[in-house]
Image: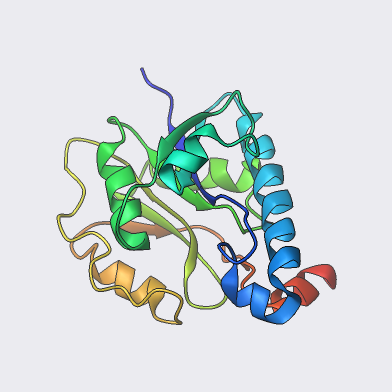
Length: 198
């Protein structure tokens, strides 16, 4: 039986192309440096667990597939075109049967224990979300059993807004949804400050 998979969404950490809201607070170079360090830390942490396969979903596609930034031993897949919702929906639809989670690369609390708990939640649900404190989410996953993913997955979601989670939940109408822990992702300097004081 195929192992569950964790799909870590990452962007090539180039100044001005990654963490643009954080860059407005701390500068483009510092924001890119922070994202690179955090995404690498998460990738290495999650890849150490044999209970699942960790795959990097990279963007931009061609550059990410050949990048030397990311660990060479981890399998990569292109995110492809479209907004974040279209790219996540494609990754979940293309995953083989069995549980699959998508995790953001900018969430310091995304560790193996929390990923294991999210997979456990999928034993009794069709989908799982890990809410973020800002109204978005740091994790989403599907049980990927006999029923295909919803056809309108993530359509009409107001990304980078306090409505991202509630809009996404509407696209899962009629499905059993479980919730993992609420975490803080990093979009602004205040998020970094809050994480340092915890």
